[in-house]
Length: 158
Picture 1 (cartoon, rainbow, N blue to C red):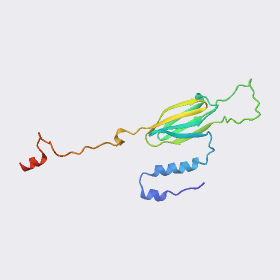
Picture 2 (tube, rainbow, N blue to C red):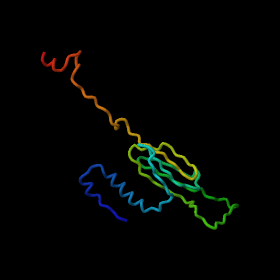
Picture 3 (tube, rainbow, N blue to C red):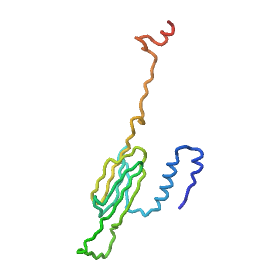
């Protein structure tokens, strides 16, 4: 695994330490096992969707938690304690192991909903900027009509 030295960034920029941690985390997580497989897609200008293949998991075995800028999806397979039904597998290709998948979310990205259908867990996300951060038009004053139809120049001449 290749490591990067971000110390020059810390000397000349303020507030980018979180970005450096995210880059380091992404480098570490790329070495993970990659299970379960997932897709991330954009569904609009500020809308996203994560699809995770969770075949064999029921909704009560899955947990989705959004905390700060992190989204964690956890699957814990319920113990199959039914001794009366013993299965003999010739091939066992469906993974029924527990998992935890983490996603870093950008600022103001919130989870709008989740759905489990046909073995796919779909999580819809939306970027919702606060009104204070949205672009706004600033009106430019012309200096006319300050006091009952008089202009600023007329007031200075009087």
